[in-house]
Length: 154
Image 1: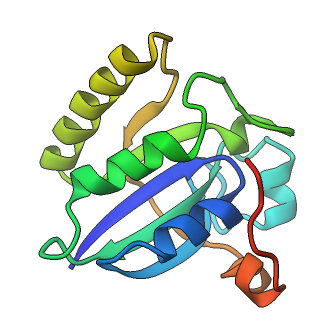
Image 2 (image 1 turned 60 degrees about the horizontal axis):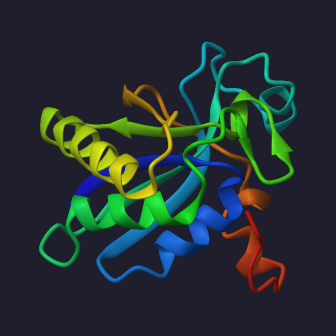
């Protein structure tokens, strides 16, 4: 099993999309990329912790490639808006790829370049080495599913 970590705005809909992907064996929503240890949702929402809302994914590379996950990521949100996805504004909603290996970093940079050429606009997605993942509060895990919400528009 391999890991992948993506930030693409509010983590609820991002988690839902990846959870539905064949080969993804588990998902968790949480926070990454900041300086505060064990941040709460309320702290992250202030924008002062430096964390992004992320989805941490475990996947079987025999069933789904990291490149396929990247393709889903690029089509799931607008990677050209800085610190914003739809009505969600702040650094915690930034577009980011947190890589777990040199191979993931190279694949991420290549796919970002390809996607930028496709859309013809500058992509502002952060590509950063994965740091400590802090799992979000339990009520955020599988939030849309738990609350009978079919989708949440980014």
